[in-house]
Amino acid sequence: MAEETTKANKAVEKLVEEIAKLSVLDLSELVSALQEKLGVSAMPVAAAAAPAAVQEGSGEAKDEGGLKTVVMTNAGGNKIGVIKALREINQNLTLMDAKGMTEAVPAEILKDAKAEDAKAAEEKLKAAGATVELK
Image 1 (cartoon, rainbow, N blue to C red):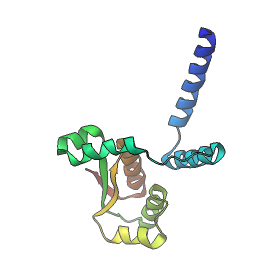
Image 2 (image 1 turned 90 degrees about the vertical axis):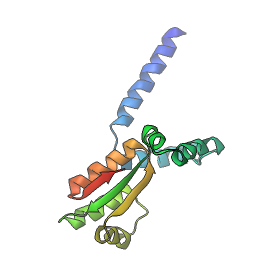
Image 3 (image 1 turned 120 degrees about the vertical axis):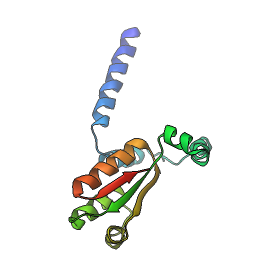
Image 4 (image 1 turned 45 degrees about the vertical axis):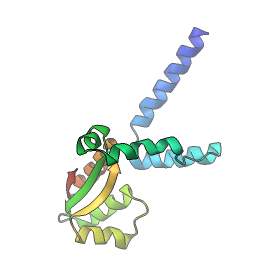
């Protein structure tokens, strides 16, 4: 029975390694596909309200909790690339919304996002030529 557990653990570890290589956009697609396949929803439950308490606390708790806000301070010269990056980060943005964000800087791109999501967004925007701050 220990062998079966070890094989299962290795299979899970292998999946985790592969998933960790995916981009945020690919992860979103994976979650949607799994929800559809398994007939479940990733709706937050009452226990998910706990991180909001950290957010309302002192600024130190917010930094330690890993919640970040991504602010674009300058869209740079490649606004088309920045608009594409914005729409990758937030797929609910229309073309006009994304264009408006590039013209009305500083613009808050993500608010109270997980540190890894904020970092990924920052990298995409910087790669497109924007100047970004994490707060």
